[in-house]
Image (cartoon, rainbow, N blue to C red; front, side, top):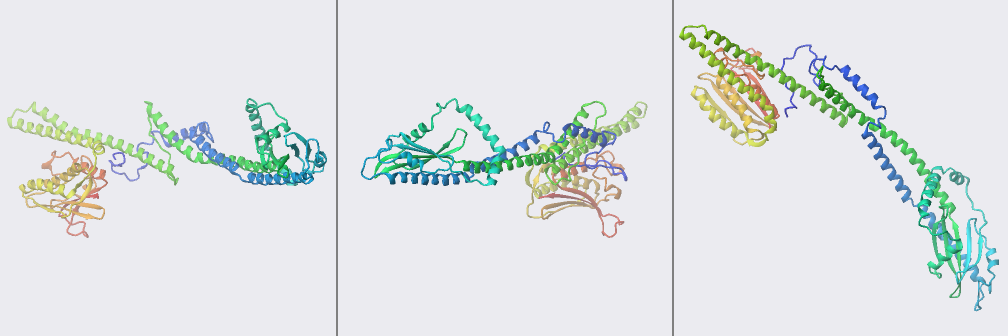
Length: 575
């Protein structure tokens, strides 16, 4: 709360250069050009992309690439085109195997014994030779005992468009990744694999693993990683199993289609990766670089202040033109640093004012003590002792008020605000202070609403404000004058007014009355006030988010030259 205030202790001088944001002192301390040169040197060391110096940039690029990789992996894993082609190829293999089995079954004699191994009842070799198969397909005929009795290899060429062939040849990324995977899997797979089997032995084991009376299709991988479909269907003579047709074919066109599709996806992935990296670097530069500038500026000021020679002020770069959080951060840092330096300047001015205020009674004391040594008359000595006593009381009061004022900031931060009834507090103060006013012949009027007004704040501190205002009014009033305290609620705020019919406030003092150590009192009352009461009141009210001002009561607002009828102090507090 204390750091958020911007209290101006000095009168504004026309034409004086003021930087309300950060630079509040003399410009010869760390001028802007020096700080800018140091920031430029820091940017030059950081480089254009700052990958080696900016963990934030690396994180942005890494997270963007992770998201992109997950997306591409999902596309490749969930792509259903290969499954559709595999189903179509499986159905075609089943149909083809069943047709071959039908060819054999049509040639089997009815009711006569048949042996495929000895070609008894059917010429297996001639039948197999008459079957045309597509290139890459291999047909094997097994008898009921799972012995190979015939085989054939397809020779019919497979039709492939020129565009598909060109795409298949240009699958550079897919071939590279497939080859890399094949080599890695071969290294680890060779440790646990059995000795390689022949195709006949492999197909025989597959037949024995299943039901020979059922038609089925199985898929697997070849030695080069290609997809292989194998269809099995029985050759029946009535209900008797006479043999099994095993038709095996490498799904070259499916692998080619999948390779082409994967190649396109991977090409787009490479392009998207490069674009993502570029955009990530641009994005990181708009985030990491300004944050680095803010940090560098703070570090430059910190390092300079560590030196005993020519300490400088921290100058935060102005990025408030950015409509984002970095702009807000820059504005907040500049405001915070400015508030700190305002507080430092205020404390320096306060210390100077304290020294000045203490010098006056000390000078009076020194003069009175010096005179006391040489005067002989008893009445003169009594007068000097009265002066000394008055100055001592003045010093005691001044030191006490200064101590209270210096502790006020920290106490306002430490104390916790609580809700309380403002009108009840004002009534209690009025009853206590009204007795003092009536003893001096001053009429004391209270005009407060009936309904309570609850506010959030420090009750004791706000009570101190109204005690100061009421006691000030009493001190300026004489016998026959009047003091009126009234309050009104206005939407989201409450106004508390303390009026008196005293001499009013000089016009030249209205702008200075809330400054520290300023006091506008008669000569007969000199030294009885430190001039800190109204300054402390203003600080307490503003700490609660309120306002306080003073004005003269005039018979008509149109005539500002008319003699004032009294003084009015107004306190506005949020509800």
